Amino acid sequence: MRITRLSTVVVGMAAALVCTIAPTAAAAPVHVAACNGYVGLTFDDGPSNDKTPAILNALRQNGLRATMFNEGQFAAAAPSQVRAQVSAGMWVGNHSYTHPHLTQMSSAQVDSEISRTQQAIANAGGGTPRLFRPPYGETNGTVAQVAAKYGLRQIIWDVDSGDWNNASVDAIVAANNRLTNGQIILMHEWPANTLAAIPRIAQGLASRNLCAGMISPSTGRAVAPG
Image (cartoon, rainbow, N blue to C red):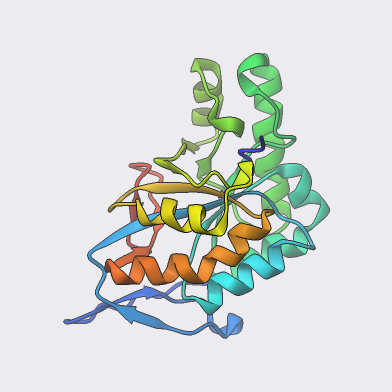
């Protein structure tokens, strides 16, 4: 299985908070709702020229923002999609260069996987990531030490959508409906069912007054954007 910014303005209001605002250039709708909590939507294994545009379009149309954990090899191959992620108001994280089992590698090999991805994303216009998701969620002391060397916070997840394992649209929506304040869910860019689930994910969060937030590099939890 593959477990594989344009500025953002957060406007405070007395009765409501802006849940999500994509940059003006993205022409995304502004969703205003009472946010009683924030959750972290994450999408691994991008970017790609064939999948990323549709995911970004669906997220913007539904007033959602997410953290995109990109593989370095794909960021290098499709730099325009990294820029598109940022332009759409998403956050970009490091997901290693080739998606290996890092816990089976030496410190030097892990360093190469992480450092090359940092560079590939920066070269593509994605800034310098502050979040790192180890492939397959596998980590150990060596991986943690190298990630810390590059100022990266390791991010696993609280809920697995199962989309990598052919989960149905209903199952992916149900998994998102289990999220509570501060929690993070694992999803991927490539499953068709994940793309199809996005409108219902947005509806489910709104019905519970939860908003899609950013993942704090300090705490590793989902918080209000900004």
